[in-house]
Length: 479
Image (cartoon, rainbow, N blue to C red; front, side, top):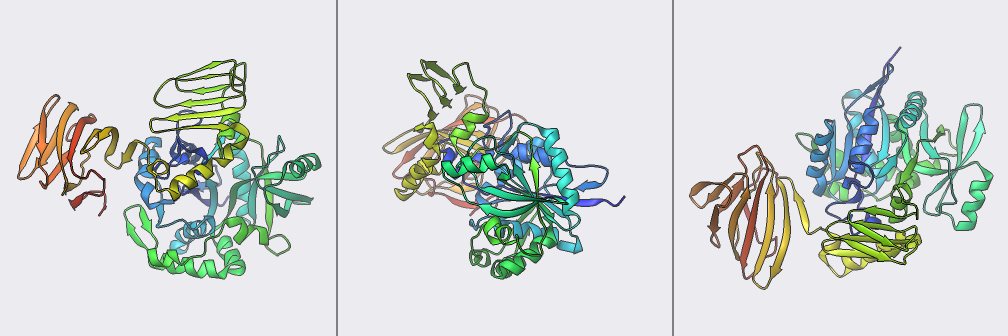
């Protein structure tokens, strides 16, 4: 029995605007824990890690993501115990076709031609064994040269998903047509006819098959992606395509670039039905659908109290949220923003995000608590000429050696041990000890201990923006 070499590919570059305010540009939905005890990204990685079989040799996952999320990817993978084969970092979004092309070019390095198992990073699956069996079957079909798409048998007339129209033949199910998100009446007809499936966004194919199809249907994307790949730089597991070259790649989805053009061609495009409790958490209504509900159909995450309310989702992050007399509503609370929406219109949250972006407000980009490769900081309070932050530094982590032109800082250790570089002095501070960093002083904070370090930082000065920072040395490659 010959082994099928398989390269899992996780698309982790989405922004998740429809799950605002929990999802932000700096911490998008795939890294959130919305179902179970692990993030959607971690769940995707663990599902793919279960695909090994007697005839299937599995590599570590290749992750395609945003440069800004690279340490989130590594931190969350580390928590699962999985090691990536590569983390491909897009300098800007160019949709899924160029992203998959980078993964295919990476997989083809050195003359290999593995089967790529490609999945988004923001879906849930409740039946893991069924998922594994279906994907293994898809791998075996793809090893023979087919492109295999995973389709979901619809259980309702959903207008938020694309559909696949299939036709049965001797080999199973062929793909006759891709259909855009339908209106309600059309969706009802699709469900009644029985040969329409939801497009899961998951597909399985050899790397060479993707490149052949792309070069046939979209040679411009293929050529521009190859140029960006040729200009790549490699930093440990991080692979960065050439920035200027990648900016010139046309932005297009996998479906538009290739999949929708395959029916009627000589490229074998198959569909395999996936019955594994799949859900695409594309909006808050989908989160409500997969969550555990009380007797009135309500879903509570965090500290929530319902009175005379039905089929309502409350997601409370930092305080008690109480609702009275609501039906089919979504309430999402974070420390700096609250969303209240008709559940059926929760897809329209993206309009709010677009407005925040147009007004250059920070609530669409970062949470009050901001994750960094060394830990996190939480902006507790601020006013004219002062700001208070709670800062956590991971064991063994070090912030950059830096200086500020417009602010001084007071640091108070709450727990753990701090190693503080303050000008030409290096101090060790423990709980309840403090130090003062004058304006213009070169300084650094590190955690030499084995437990997290927490400090309170009080900033004071004429300008307190995050861009008032001059880095002299940085472990994480930031400017």
